[in-house]
Image 1: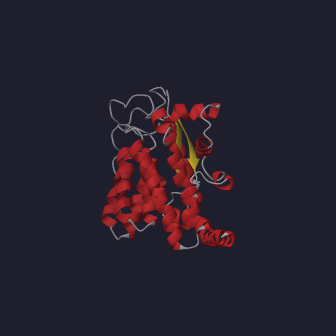
Image 2: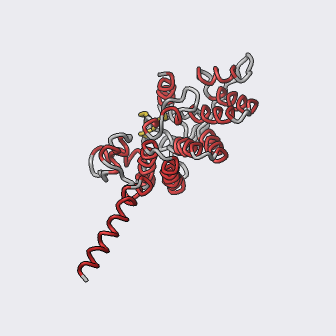
Image 3: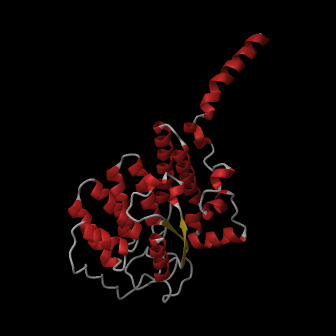
Length: 285
């Protein structure tokens, strides 16, 4: 009897080892290894160690709002899964990890408050993952949503234009470039795309500023840091967008004054002028 039990344990052990070591089972540790966490944005380092009581944790809690911050570990899980996709050799495992990331990012979009200022970035990142999975329709819809939420979010224009061009939809891509230049008239990247797509002088007329603002508060992060999404996937794949090397990670809504929060724009999700300038500087680097 003892021999039979020992043999059964040995059989099960041998059978389980390949499964436990398979990259496809990595969701058992969605919070990531120390090496994986070191590649994530600082906001994830704080969130994944459940450090809300620290000064840094309290700062993020105030910036994101409690109703949004409580869900942010799912965003970080998604970033971990994308890191694993980049490291996997088999396409099946890559796509599996990406599908897990889709679920995590989608959860945040569903669970967070409707006015969460990070929604444009979340739409953009989720759209990029859909592209890697060969799901172009979902991707273009998400890029368009990001633009709708924040007409001043340059990476979303670049991503949408890139995808439209890849499908041969030059005229539609030109329309997107024109709309982008109406809101970002000083964007060198959008100007180049506009002319590459057949646009002519004069450039599109800049959109008029709204006479009333959106109000100070959590919709207006007064500062930004940049999260390098090339860590989540290979640089050649993730950086399909023309000139879009980084995605801004706005890390501070809170009590910005009307003068400093970019209230003149008719957009609930737009960052203030100084944040927009940091984005543009980041894209030129």
